Amino acid sequence: MGLPFRSLTMLVLLIWFLRWPIIEAQTPARSLDAILQDYAYRAFVRPRTGIPYDGFPPSNLSGIQISAIRLRSGSLYTRGVESYKEFTIPIGVISQPYVERLVFVYQNLGNWSTIYYPLPGYIYLSPILGLLAYDASNLSAKNLPELAIHASEEPISINFPQPKPVPNGSIAECVHFDLNGNINFTNLVSRTICETFEQGHFSIVVKSSIAPSPAPAPPPPPPLNKKKKMNKMEKAADSGEALQMTVVGNTKAPAATTTRTQPTLETEYVPCLGKSDDSIHGKFCEPLLKK
Image 1 (cartoon, rainbow, N blue to C red):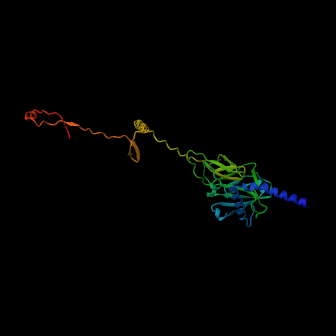
Image 2: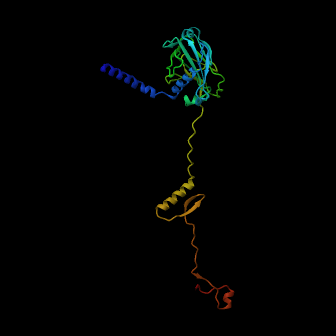
Image 3: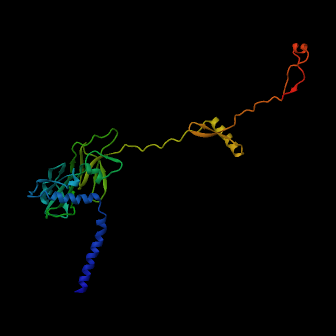
């Protein structure tokens, strides 16, 4: 008894550890899907097959719209769903694994679109719309894995109501976020319609036209005569000649000395104080030292 029990315990632990990285790697968007599946199923009070029921997300996710519709797999394949919110589901849609009944959960993420599905370099023209399939055998179940659905004949159509206008010079595209985290871009069928063969999340986007800011231009070089003057003053400073500083605007700069030495006369000529005729004729005596 001890050995089989120990082997079973080890097997359970091995399965748990193998699942651990998957649990840790769950993205916020996938966590949101699990929450919205739970709250959408709560709308099934007295459910009738083929009738959509609008649910209410938790208060901290106000602005998101959810709905759920229960269908028979056989009826889905042979009849499709003519209109389920913005989705038209054609005949020929199959699920894997096969279940007798399934539930389509509808999501409109509204202003939460860019939070859970950021797309750098693109601008959303419409909110993210989601369509996910789950097993309907237990309408009280939580954290259900999605079923893999595939449109085998005609694609599923998504008609986005009143998308934002396309900016001039831009081209609108359909974007599809699948459940594996892949992002796929396709052309629109018309101005408001995208198509898909699988479930997931969808929107209309355009590439962002915002260009990066140009680098600031380098300052212009100083004028040639000013550059020569600066070189001359730098050489004078290197040779040890003291330079005075002067203020130019808000900047101090070296300046050459401009003081000029005043001449001093050591001798002066004065008129003679001798004969009157000498002074009359403008004659001068010998120079005298000026005291």
